[in-house]
Image (tube, rainbow, N blue to C red):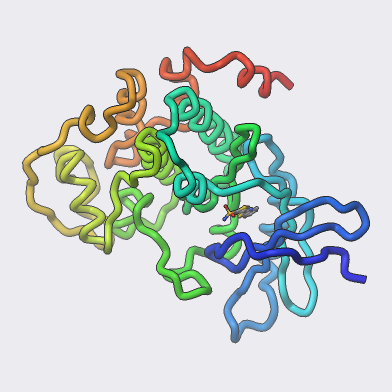
Length: 299
Ligand code: Z3R
């Protein structure tokens, strides 16, 4: 008998379809992610198998638990704990704006999850609302941490959907190949802004040039004087100086001063000047966090 009974489809991820499923022995509800690798490759590369097995040890309350990795008929299935919905669907189903205490509690959990993975030297590299999951009780969990190293980030999803550029930092958009923890800090900052506006993406670029233009119109155009080494990046090109037409207060009107300050410390074009996720979750923006959240981290 099959160990998992497949129920409905719940998502189209970068690497394959995600299904809700039930463990036939324990009745436990899980999420199954069948990973599609290159069609012409002979089975699953051993490096991918090794990487995914390491991810089983990555346990923290803000990381979606990887229960087991199944490997059969040359295909890989990742079995995860089930969560009620992803942040993309949460934004789509909102009927009223998200209150700012919820923004604070969700973003705090996001930063705790990112900081934990970074402390274990695991990067995400593709953080976006679709791989941020939330439960009915307000818990947030990150999905797909470490999968980029295991499988790479394709240009298109297996379903031919284009991979979004909206959460990519300028260094990666200019072709930087050396990935560091700072990439996830930028993505987290974009998601912070989007949470504060109840789902209005901060930089919804249509291609690499448009993406960089949108960033530079808010932060100023990157140049050697503000970001040493930028001109040496593989796909660097000089963009014009755009007049700054929007203030932070106009971009994220619902964030208080501490929130706007935190956002600006994370959203810096030069990756070496971005604060870390660990420093970010200690920022004074979180001084007024509800007490029960702290209790989650006392073990
Ligand atoms: C692990 C990895 C990816 C996903 C998991 C668990 N759960 C997902 S995506 C999910 C998505 C929804 S509900 C659960 S949706 O209905 O909001 N798209």
